[in-house]
Image (cartoon, rainbow, N blue to C red):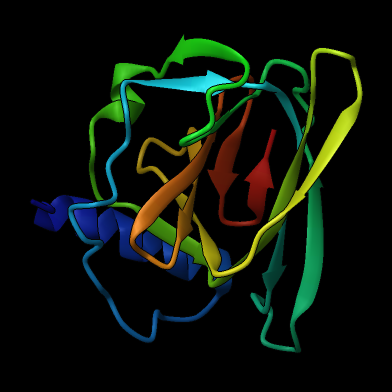
Length: 161
């Protein structure tokens, strides 16, 4: 259950990032669970999203991961890569902060040192309240991927690290 403090922090984070109040607040269904372990096919190189945070139109952004290759990418339901423990502070479910209504994709480096580009549809990026994990949620019903590690973080100006 979401605490009033967790909700207040999530709302403040949304407002800081987008520069406007959220249109609505919704609880994610219980099907959105953060697992204790995921398979990591390789380090995350970038995430992409569409944002209208300055209210002067929507723009597509590619956030290159500054702390690559330390940032991990776990794709839920895929069993390629190395099984990796998700830090407990992240796997503990809490109030998630929707930062963008439309995620466009991500990229990672596979074992052959090739960049794998992935596009997504019907997905949104959410931040974990620790500010240290980015969650890709499909149709507001299912966790599709999780990005964490390195200097990855969330600030009012956007994704950092």
